[in-house]
Amino acid sequence: MGVELSHIFNQSKQGSLFVNKSVLQTNYTPDTVPHRNTQIEQIASILAPSLQGNKPSNLFLYGKTGTGKTLSIHYVKNELLKHVAKDASFQLKITYLNCKLRKVSDTEYRILAELIKKMGGSVPATGLPTESVYSRFLEMLDAKPMLMILILDEIDYAVQKISDSFLYNILRLNSELTQSQLCLVGISNDLTFLDNLDPRVKSSLSEEELVFPPYNALQLKDILGERADVAFKQGSVGEGVIAKCAALAAREHGDARRALDLIRIAGELCEREGGDSILLKHLDHANEKMERDKILDVVRSEPQQFQLVLLAIIHLTELKKQESVFTGDIFQMYQELCVKNKSDVLTPRRVSDIIMEFDMLGLINSRVVSKGRGGRMREITLVIPLNIVEKAKEILHESLLL
DNA sequence: CGAGATTCATGTGAAGTATACCTTTAGGCTTAA
DNA sequence: AAGCCTAAAGGTATACTTCACATGAATCTCGTA
Image (cartoon, rainbow, N blue to C red):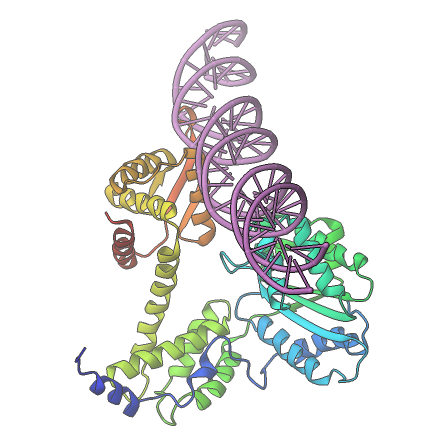
């Protein structure tokens, strides 16, 4: 107590560049969605039958991250809800769920549990047969006449993690509903995902298909400009900043979300510095910071055993001056770390799976190589930039009591 | 010299185990009439 | 007698282990030129 903080608060109040920061936040849904009119109209016309209580075709949306898929579907969702008749003989319910949230919706069971929670019910975190969670979901759906539009974002992730029988089960639910109907909207940023699907599921899910092309730099500039006008004080965005930001994001497959994050963080950095207008250098800093935070968040939130494996990989990569390391060495190093950390040692089998998960998270690259008589193993390369590795190591050491 | 067999170190799938947690059920206890 | 609590029984998901078999190219073997 007694630390004088008012100068910090005052400063940030005075120097605030932001008028309304929320429009730059990722969960913000603007009133208009520029450059996505055709997609929105198409979605709307596909989903329109729902207003009459008829089940619309299942819909599949494809596009890279930050191309406005989620935004568009939310927009249509809100409009639909606005237009639904008050006295309708049925209830229109639109539920959105992102399948990629770790520990929330990354198993079949948890996705269903989450859906039920969103509908106002509750299920225990574990202990129930998945089958009975299905029937509970079914019951809730069928309790009164209802038209449910279920939006599953990052659906490819769910299928990869669970298998496509999950989608099959969901689609099958329709035939078991008596009063209600269920319409599925799948969103994915991996188009090849459709190809490895059970043909029945595939044809059923993609009754309608829609592709979201990436924004180009000009469109991004538009979007950014529009939001920045609202978000920032007038004149606080430096020359060429918007354009640079748009260009950066356009390079990253037209990811608008990234562009918005970028400029928001640039604004925050600038503000912290006490500057009164955002400059190009702030953008660069923001770019670095975003990358760093993303990785470090993942590192931080990993369970203990995962952290140990990751630390083993990092140590080993530093120890050997070469780029890549192999499974066997990692396991050895991991064992040593476990002893130091006084934690249990997992089997090589499990560690192998953990390494695979890191691969999926994008922290490492791995591929199976055969060294002839030398055996067969994974060749693993750390993809965390060097300057971040140091920070990651700190975090790991801290949380592992090493 | 070259085709085919061998080999190594681990990948990978299936099945099993431990743990934590859930529902159901039956018995025992309390309570109110 | 009805209602409530508790503990045991029976069940599941998840993280992990165990077991067995699959891989794929460097290396070895051996017949042949």
